[in-house]
Image 1: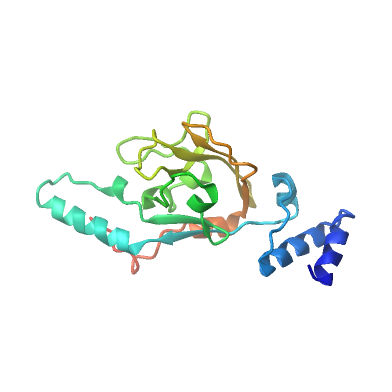
Image 2: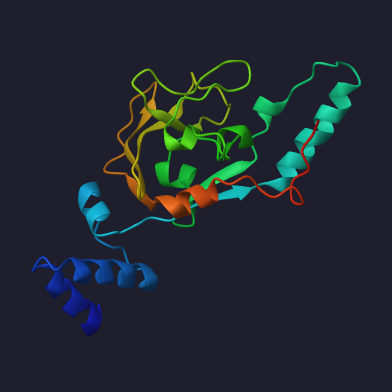
Length: 207
């Protein structure tokens, strides 16, 4: 650790919140692990994680081709729930990698992009009437690779304030698996920007 980082580390021990923020950012830029304060402290110090969504257009195209083929045989074909082209990323890493386990990396677009408020902790009924919101109000962030929520799902308590979105109390169900102190805090305006539907010139909507 160079002298500048040592100086910032010493300053954080005095309770200087600005020094804590600068140390966290400097360590992240240098690729070194940054200390992880409690969630409430991270909110107070504005130590935000970055949230992004990655649209897998190849999956969209494959689903569309399948739907068009199926439409020749059934007027009621609806593969929308099976379209899982959106990858969630935190701090430029896939959420499924951060969480470990056997989670699939993708969610359906209708469960991610606004006006859907699923990832803002609001109740949301997926096509067919099924809701991935657990009875205790936790929100499903990922599902196991087979796509069956009964096999496994990653849940979090999603809390939204005027300025922040936090994911806390992350856990795997139905088989409990400890996830340590895994928790994230995002700046709300940046988080919601990542939830905006891709523009029509990138993804043609099927009818």
